[in-house]
Amino acid sequence: MQAANTWEQVDRYISEQLLPDDAVLEEVLAANRKAGLPPIEVTPNQGQLLNLWARMQRAERILEIGTLGGYSTIWLARALPVGGRLVTLELDPLHARTAQHNFALAELESKIELRVGPALEQLARMKEENAAPFDLIFIDADKPNNPGYLQWALHFSRPGTVIIGDNVIRDGEIVNGHSTDPRVQGVRQFYRMLAAEPRISATAIQTVGSKGYDGFMLGIVNG
Image 1 (cartoon, rainbow, N blue to C red):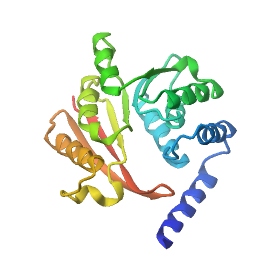
Image 2: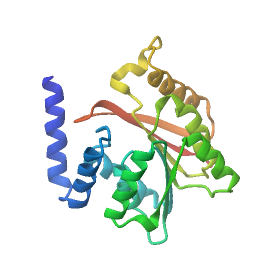
Image 3: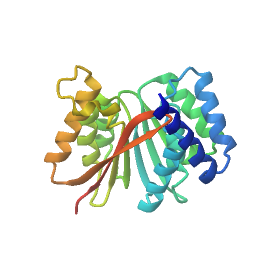
Image 4: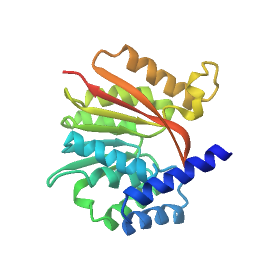
């Protein structure tokens, strides 16, 4: 408990020191709570990390699998240049309506395409539509389907595309091969696929903070 309190205090300190006050993002979080969405968004300092990764990548096209209320979407979309585009996929209609409201609040509607429905179905439809490759892909949806999301992420990549996966540590449970949690097993399969896939070079970083003990996978598609 003491460690968790320290993690939260450090998160708050980092945000206070390095992130300017942002009334829009505060309103986004308030709208998510009002709509009854689960409080599982990335933290502000993690949102800034996503934004920096997108800017370092000079991403012009971003794919996000898992929108929730659009908090991480806004961080990513703010990194886009003029003419940039972000496609985000959300299963739950309530979450999607809340996210669309938040995109308007952030004045980013022109940069974001929100597609509603099962992500695997939306991704297959995007293939039929001949969607162009993306520069950065953020996977943050239901973990049992992570293996399928990785396959589609590779399909919609080009050499140099950055692929990021969230929640890949799960309080350390990823080392438990006997876990009966389908989320843990989905992430373990995700790792096995990454290890066997020659098209991508990847690593994972462990994180601690106000949302607990977890981490990100970071990979780049090889040329």
